[in-house]
Image (tube, rainbow over all chains, first blue to last red; front, side):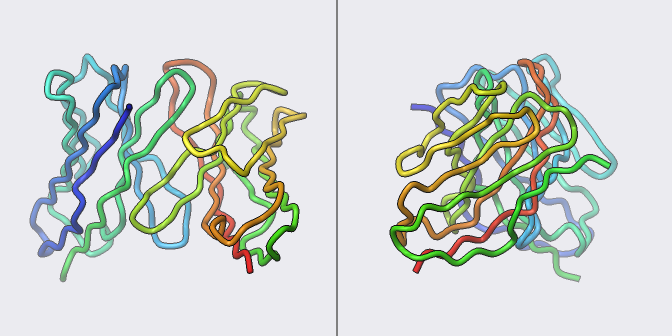
Length: 110
Length: 114
């Protein structure tokens, strides 16, 4: 069966450090992978999309890598700030069906 | 500004009631989705639709049905609400095609079944 797995544990980091989140998948052959941010009590908000032929993508302080051989994506938040505290979700599409991992909660301490 | 609107933010229903959750998007998106979100389980796909009157089961369709009579509206129906359907329900929409861009989410409906 298809699975999307993210770091099961919450991540607590000091302001200014880099947070690295992992998304592993099985039984998918995705053309792209997405990352979303979710704040408590709100719907997820799209952050980045990376395609299978892109090894790395950046947006401001965010960096995403995509290794289709390892079946893994890494999501980095550099120079983290307390405002980055949230749950981060990866998502994969199989035809029209968009499925999400369980998410990793990041807390950035001032 | 793009928008996905869910009809209720909070809802309390009794066991056995038929419950309708409504979702409307104003972006002319072909794809619409219903998820439920529970602590530790993440977002689980209930149903999705890629066109008017078309629907596909997601990962956990049991106890639910959907309706899409118009492109902008996607309804989730709990035929006979049960306490294990207490959850946060999230609707989303996206553009057509395999090269989908982002999904836009509504604010969520927190449903409590008592």
